[in-house]
Image 1 (cartoon, rainbow, N blue to C red):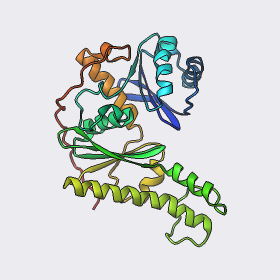
Image 2 (cartoon, rainbow, N blue to C red):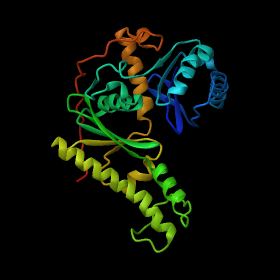
Image 3 (cartoon, rainbow, N blue to C red):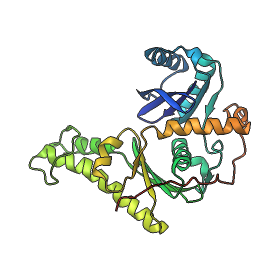
Image 4 (cartoon, rainbow, N blue to C red):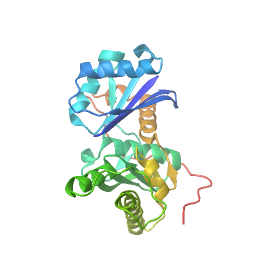
Length: 288
């Protein structure tokens, strides 16, 4: 079984896969101070909660945007599972051309999302990931990662509002029935939730205008269920897109015989420059 782990700034999402089937998933708190010993204890407990032993895990694939934790996860594979950890970065994503000026600066989770969404739907695509930041990733028709947009996430925006305004306190994150609030709480709820949805819709429109083409919009991330109902542009929701991408990339590297060199052991494969053949989506009807 493959354990796929997406290490984010606020949360870490882990999934245990049997082939392409997600058997169990967990949402954990990220801490940049975790040591390898602490991670070993944590993932022992996580697996025990699913009735699994560490010996059931035969592979570990990780994408991390927290550099302080990356080395600890490399060691976790050897210490707990007896295997090397496949750490995904910009040189370990087969079939994805990266058009950014500095490919190394692109978050690994964004590249994994791009590979997974393109494999599922073809292009062109806009992938919106609702996390600590709300990120927009653009994938072209021929499967190249063109670039994207990074905006403050919902939680960051809400925390900034309540911490800087003396009379505003935190509210329950529920979308009101009306746009015009009749009290402070409902006014804030509309501003936070509907306001962020309008930000998403507006940026998507600008991207599509710049590209001159209608794109499928795929949403993922922990806060998707909060924003998606308020958005007019999101076509598809894939809650576990990043985990699915880790499984996809691990399997591609295995088939290419590059898995060993793709592991973070000092030897890395050369980046591929030819994108895979796009898969055509059937029956897609975009929102007007």
